Amino acid sequence: MTLLLLLAGTSIILGIKSRYVKPAWSIFFFLISILIFLTWLVEYNFLGNIDFFVSDEIKYVEWGESFIWSDFFSDRGLWGAINHWLLKLDVSTGDYGLKIINIFFMYFTLVLLTKVYLEKRIFITAMIFLPYIFVIAIHNLRDTLILLLFTSCVYSLTKEKKALIYGFISLFLLLFLRPIFVGIAVLIILINLFWIFLISLSKGRFKLRLTMSVILILLLLGPIAYSKLEFAMNRATLNIEEGGKRLERMEEQGYATGNRLRDLVVAGSRYVLTPIPLSTLQRLFAGGSEDWGVLDDMIRVWNQSGYYLLLIYILFRWKTAVSVIRKMTAPQLSVIMSLFIYMPIYSLHLYGVCHQRLKLPFQLAVMIIAVLVWQYRKKNKKEIKSQENYF
Image (cartoon, rainbow, N blue to C red):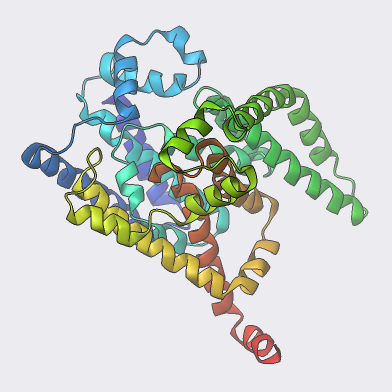
């Protein structure tokens, strides 16, 4: 209960002090989250078609029961510690605390994204067009916290020095949650800092603080980043080359053919475009997902329909989308890269066959660009109209 109260208090402070999230929207977010959780409880208790914990949730609960603090320094250690704290050390909330803790992490993530892009509509648009964020928020899975820490560190470490401490803390915690992402985060940070460095030199301005930041990150995190990226590439190579166990399994299930280039293209398309709303709707009418339930599929149909609308909007406004991306600051570009990079990671690692929670970051990136494109076009109507008439 103590941890949940701390997170709730932090949420209240953010809701009051945030310049870009209206208090009414914060209240709306938590009301919808509670409503969806209560609806899920009704399905669990009265329909009896789903288990309280499913998939990886079961592993985390079992680990939380037997967790010892030396486990913290292993992969997923932070999430094991959180499970252990809520189950054994904190004032007990039963299993319910584990189901709702991600509501706060998802809220923090949306507030962060809204702050990064200085656009209030990002928060409310996410709730309307990508409502699966509420489903992820009521499951005992580490992915929401990974997303929060991942975006936080790449944003903070490309900001001014006041934000550096938050970036290093986020990166440190990410090391005990999803180590591979530490290497990816450092790579994104260095790319953007190096780009800023080149721009500053081209303008005749040598920035000592920026240079020292790049050197410091290289010295402190370079070896870790290299080891994690090397491990990731070795694993990806095993997955896509003939003889890899995952490839064999994917071939048996019809998701891969052994043609490396074709499989990667199809995997990327599968990641971006599936599940198609109609196929999920058909499964819903057939009784819903066996593991995740009817409510999950209902919201997934809505989510995918909203995502498709956002994707189509960007495709029709692709020139403006390019302009929007080119105008992004280094921190903004770092965050959008951290969201988009989920696509190649899970296209390589899982051939695009992955749960909705692993596709949501990419969908959030699409949503952010759609909102920025709409805002840009609204502010520059005359200029855009003249360009369209010209072409």
